Image 1 (spheres, one colour):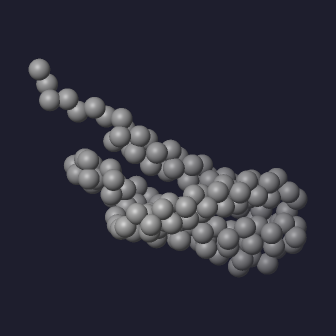
Image 2 (tube, one colour):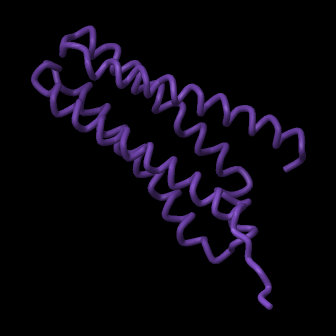
Length: 149
């Protein structure tokens, strides 16, 4: 990937990360609101925006290979990177499942507590996933593999 495309991809990734952060904040706020039709409508709108943003972010991250810069330095970490990539896809699928469950139920108040718990668990898992990604990248670039004495 040439430098110009890399800069554009990096900028877009930053924008998607910022949008994701805002949407997660909105989601947190909505989970504190009373369980009514209006809350449900806004909740679905935020989830739809996340479901649109997350695949675009994944696609950009995977251009040239997911965590390729880590694998170039440490090819033996491919199992960890593959596990992270699989986890990210599973998080997306879980969010889709949660969203579909909300849209199928006619009375949001009936499932509101279950939805709150499911979405809070999902957000915790997503944040843990992001921490794990950062930890691997930081470790790869801070690890000093010496040649020995």
